[in-house]
Length: 134
Length: 360
Image (cartoon, rainbow over all chains, first blue to last red; front, side, top):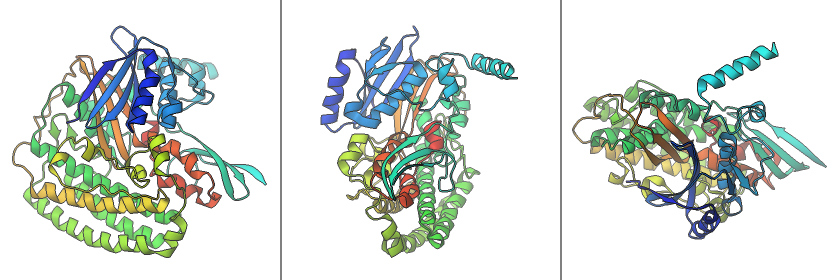
């Protein structure tokens, strides 16, 4: 059975933890992000410590160190995605290019807001923009 | 002479949209970049406004090839949050569908790889075999793309005795056909010349970049979620995990070819030992309890992971989908370096990319 173990960590522990995991040959499954009930951002570093997944979570931090130096693209793509979806910034991460969201969304209401804005509002904004164009 | 050569996002040698920028010196690729996001549909966002059954339908549309993998992994998360135990027979049917999906995905890729290198007769032979698998999937599920076999708490359709016998006899036929084609693919000079020492990724690089699935196994990384972190009914079956050391396109063919045999073996074991009993707990619409779950499944292209967060409501609070192509696509620029422009299409295709999955 795939167990999921959550441990809370601080911002300063992210890099040493990644180094330790990488040295032990453990895969970074993913860096997930979500907003909790209080609206605080939770970033979860999930490592495959088979057969379990160990999740190390940081709550309430919007600026984090990048672990791209350690886990290469396995981390940087996930960090770029979190930047687009939640607006998290990662120190040392190249954010000069978009990953998923269209460029016009990144310039306006999309970046960092897409997961918290209700779908109906996003549709309304898009329709208003279309009308403006006409 | 140096020049920058763009491939895609829409290009005849690409099955799906990706933009690769090749920085070349004459015929040689010196560096490369890839750009994705041409197929982004905001599925994770849509999930937050749907209930569990609607989400199952939606996540099956993430990908047209591994649709069952998405539904299965999402269902495992919801079942974990709600502490639902799937009946054994339901789990076996999930595994049978997952392995049929792997077979058709690997055969599809092997056929396309042959087509890209110009070996169209092999492409036709392999796709002919894939039809046998597609027919089985159609008989099992009633569908050929989105199988809709998964429900929260089990499988949606049962396997009767007639279908079980027919599947077993078709799998024996498939094995014979695989023997012939795998022998050709692994011994043909044209295929060897176009694929050996092309797009090489060594073990250390595969580990560093977090490659997954057959792509990683072809580079000597011995990982497979089905064995390392068993889920569903996978713990009940014996199978090997093929791993090869060279990390070139040829090894990626070998790994996928050998995996086809293992999938046939798993399906046969499951059909031979199909437990009696119900296949699900009734198609009820569950309220997703408050909690978080992360589950992984070895999809045809590698480890697929889902994070589902429930808020004690019908809708999901968050669904985060991370697909194998998310890990494998960033390795493409690395593999393209010091190869010829003529091999670029084949190298991109060699990871069996799914940009539909990647972009979500």
